[in-house]
Amino acid sequence: MPVLFQERTTDMGELYFVRHGQTIWNVENKICGATDIALTDLGHRQAVETGEKILEMGIFVDEILYSPLIRAAETARHISEITGIPAREEPRLTEQNFGKYESTPRDGKEFQKAKEQFVCRYEGGESMLHLAQRIYNLLDELREKSGEKTYLLVAHNGIARIVQSYFHEMTNEEFAAFGVKNCEIRRYIF
Image 1 (cartoon, rainbow, N blue to C red):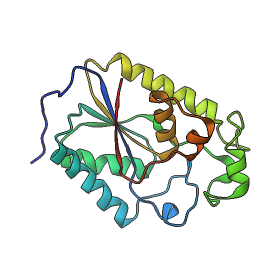
Image 2: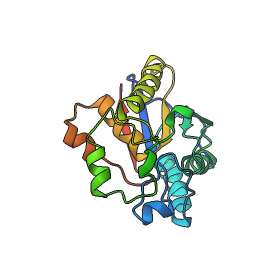
Image 3: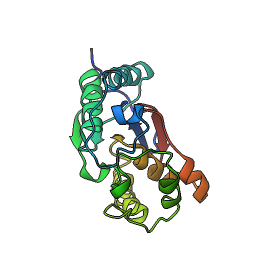
């Protein structure tokens, strides 16, 4: 039975983050970016298990905000169905557009070099600075509401990197190396 209402456990504003479940391009080590890639069967199971884990851990969340890309939307749908937490699409959580690098190997040397340039738009994509601007703006809005609501963001690894940098000081190397596993739950305090 889904838990719709729970006691808030802290007076501080909290935010939770979950990366979407596994996709076929994750398995194939390809950059998904803004390309709309579906979950694998395992990805669907991971999302259901994440909803169950949220219930088991007694995590309090008022609302799920999710990326419109199908892999995140389906992950959020599963979590919402299991937990009873309402969910709504948040377009700013769309993964970074990596331009010409989408569908190429994640560990490709040319891509790794291009990632060092935060102003670069990846030839048809979105720069790291533009991505940070839209995510930081969203997080600033959520911080304003943090006394009223606790949110769960369901999005992507690139978004996870920006969220981590919002809450923690990071070197460029730490930022570039940071990542979360599929359906990993992260907690942040404003």
